Image (tube, rainbow, N blue to C red):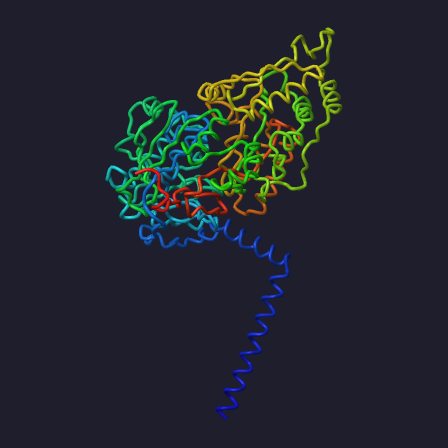
Length: 582
C-alpha cells in the first residue's frame, strides 16, 4: 500500500507540475492578460494610501536601510553640467528644476520617499507612519539614528519648524503652501513623533507631508521672514552630500557627507558646472571636463547615432512621470489673450509636428493636450491635439474682432495693435527656435511678435511678477499622482503663485477642489478628465511637446539603472582603474 500510495503521489505531483507549466506558458502568450495584471499592480501601488487608512501602521524594513550598501568602489567625482544657474539653494523658496537637481536627495531629505520601481511610499527619515481611519490624522515616527550633517539629531521640532515655515504667509513659498492649506495643526507627541491634523481629506496628504524636505531649525530659525527669504546659499540638511561652495556663474560643489546616517554613495564629490551654451557643453563632455549632461533633442538625435561618441558615452533615453511638458503660456491679463478664441488661434499657428520632426528630431516625442503625464491615467486619451491650421486661426481671430482696421498689415481691436512681446530664456537654443517659428507664422496672419530674451534669474523674476505677454517654459517634476491646484487654481494667480498666465475658470476651480478630496482614484480621474477637457478648450497654454528624459554620461560610471521613476545618481560608482579624480 505504501508503494502504491507513493507512486500515486508522484504521478499526481507530475500532473500538477505539467498543469502549472502549461498555465505559465499560456500566460506568457496572453498579452492582454499581462496588461491587466500590470494595471492591477499599478492600481494597488497607487492605492497604498487608501489601504493604510484602515489604521494599520506602515513598516517597510526601514531599520535595515543603513546596512544596504551601494555596490562598487569608492572614489572619483561626478561633474554634472547645468545649462542655467539655480536662483537659490533654499528648498522652501526655490522654484527652478536646477535647484532641485542640486539639493533634492543629496543635501535635503524627507520623511518618506517613493520606491523607484514599486511606486509606493516608503519610510526614509521616518521609521513608520500611521493614518487614522477617517484619513484626517497622520502620525510620523522618526528613526532614532537620523541626524543632520553637522551631527545635530533630527527631532519633531525640526518637522514642525519646516511645516510652519512653508505655511508662513510672509515666506516666499506660495507654490508649496497651497498643498498644506487644509492642515489644521501639527502636534508634537514626543521628540521623535508628530501628528498632523487635517480639516478635510486630501488624496496627496501622505505624499505632500511625507515628501517635505526637513530643515534643521537650529540653522534656519528666523524672526523676520524676509531674513529666511534672502537665504540663498549654504544649505544644510541630513542627506548624503554636504554643501562646499557656490562660485556664482561657474559651479556648485558638494562633497560626500562621511557623517551620513544612512547608506553612503560611492562618489565622493559632485560638481554642478554651469555652461549655458549647449554646443560648448558637448565640447566639454568630449574633452572630459564634464561627465554628465542633459542634451537638447537634436544633439541627442545626432550623437546617439555616432559610433565614436557612443563608444565613450552612454546615451540614456527614458520616460518617467516627472518628464513634464514644454509650453507657450498666454498671459490672460493682456488684451490679446483674454479671449479663448484668440488663444486657440495661436495654437493653430504652432506647427508642432514640424517642431517634433525638424527641431526635436525625435519620433518618440509626444504632443500633449493637457497638463498630465501623457502616459498616465489622469490624462484623457480621447482628447486629441489641435492641428496646425492657419486658416482656422484666421477665422477665429476674425470672430474675436481682431482684424486689420487701419490697413497697416497688423491686426487690431479697440485701438490696440496685436503686437506682443514673447519672453524666452536667453541663450536657450530650443526656446529661440520655437519662438522664431511662432513669430514667422504669426506674421503671415497679421500678428507682430517681438522676441524678449532674458538671463534666467531675470526671467524668473519677470515670470513671478507676470511681466510678460507670452512665454516659453516647461513644467516638470510632477508626482505619481498630480494635483493641478498649484498651476491652475485661480487662487494661485497672485502672491507669486504658479498660475502665471492668470487662468481663471470657476468650473475648473470646483473640479480641482472636488478632486482633491476624492480618495477613489477612478472617480478622481473622471474629474481630471473633465478638467483636461476644459484646459483643451480654453487653451491657456499651447502644449508644445512632452519628450522622454535624455542624458549623456561618461561610460566610466557603472551601476546605471533606469527605474520607473528614472535615474538615481546616488547608485553610481566608478571602478578603481577608471577613476579620474582623487
